[in-house]
Amino acid sequence: MQHVQTRSTTSALVLTAVLIALATLLTMYTKIPVPGIRGYFNIGDVVIMTSALLLGRKQGAYIGAIGPALADLFLGYAVFVPITFVVKGIEGYLVGTLYNKDGYGSALLATIAGGVIIVAGYFIAEYFVMDPGVAFGGLLTNTIQAVMSVIISMILYTILRKRLG
Image (cartoon, rainbow, N blue to C red; front, side):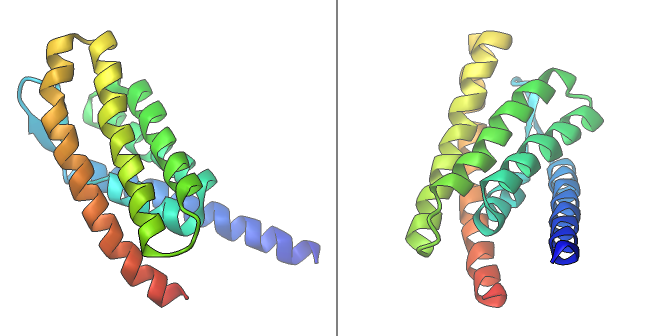
């Protein structure tokens, strides 16, 4: 019995690490810089939301906090690393917590809540860490990023849920 538990734990750890790497890469390679707000648009949240729906809040939080924060660090946006770590970690945790495995409606509400965390979290952090102009300037970009992430995550969730059973 111990061997099965260890193997399962190892598999979960490896899957989480792979998804952290995927979140990092998807964030980095879909990066579209947005002039005037010192940030960039990306769809790395798709990995966070989909992972949180399929794996739960714990993995969602790890993947959300670590993957995109590494992308910010590697891309030279060091000022955003702690903001991203907290906001995206909360996003993953919240999506995984709100999803009650009852299907599409629950998943949609959970991802929308995650999108609200993206917009509100970055607005609050940018307002106090940078300046109000940056915060207000980022509202549109962050909203578009959140909406796109919800849509793509729901498509992936629907496909993967059917395939994974």
